[in-house]
Length: 96
Image (cartoon, rainbow, N blue to C red; front, side, top):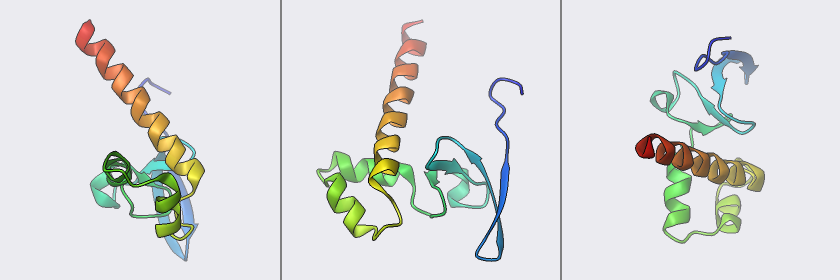
């Protein structure tokens, strides 16, 4: 597989075809969901929205409770790690 190319996964969820590119275990990009912006798998909840809520002071426990099991603690932790990795990569690109 060429660098930058990711495999599209196709599943049947609730009787509907769900196609996405995995960006992690819990984070995906699905062309027909939120304009392809990263979301939590099987939801329309954008990763950026959850990260903004955390930045605003909402705790991970509050988010897990408010999303009523649709987004797990592991998924939120993956989003934080994913964001940190992207920031680190951006920093390397700026320094180069």
